[in-house]
Length: 356
Image 1 (tube, rainbow, N blue to C red):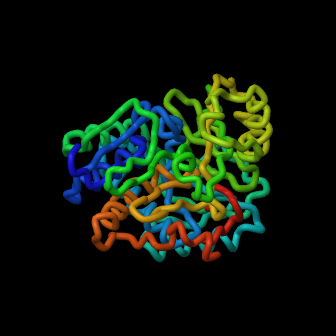
Image 2 (cartoon, rainbow, N blue to C red; image 1 turned 135 degrees about the vertical axis):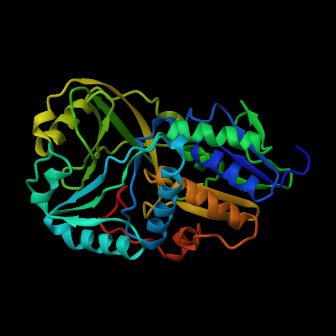
Image 3 (cartoon, one colour; image 1 turned 180 degrees about the vertical axis):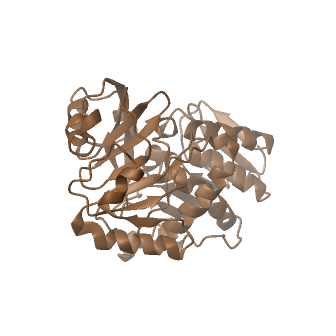
């Protein structure tokens, strides 16, 4: 494509969303993908959307991102409600994050332990200090949304190149690296580690809401037919590169899931296990993404570590404006690459982890 302004590497959730947003800015765009738009981490998404974060920039991005996802029928948004439960020691941090969200216009509130069952009847509140609840949090279909953005990119005139191994082009165009957990292979200077993550699939586990429990480190979401997807954090496996993870579930993972469920959801701890899959989190030192210029002409969107889905539409919107030389809707400077060298890391109310 002669005279390409921007080359986007990676056609998953972020690459496809960015290609659309850049094309809407009037820029000519090439979108490069070695496999297919949902063949990477996008196709393994847990599907959760929420706005509970520890920093104004991520709350603002999640709020805007959720607004765009909820208004787009291609996202298949389902308002299950989102509940974060924390220990008594984390109550002050949770109260602070709820107050931050409310100050930025998020519909969120603090719940006492005896109020949790109204949101999730199967939950056992033992050891819970309080909960943060978003009634319109819930679920979207990351693959369906991404395919819609990819199709839209094509309709907007984006030049799509499929099937070639990813590399940084040297044709004078701006390069945006949005290759998920593969981004560090293209940009070794990114301060990203790859941590293993697994999702278990259970049958006959009729949870109602999306719940992230910071006490037992188990996360649950409903699926059609009365089942649940479950994540339990705590593993220590890391990868040198994303292709080292074969995507298969660990045979021992079901025992870890059952152990976590026994404390928080005793009635479904023995639910039939029907499989699952594994993937990776791309994690920065402060568990928040890198969005910005890494070097001259090279822009990165990386380190999304479990936040990516709900932030994607808003990051695409503001990053595209920034690349086009316009003032972005949301100031992305707190997510700049240089913050790590500057020691200006983002706050983590609950300590290191994907809840950020």
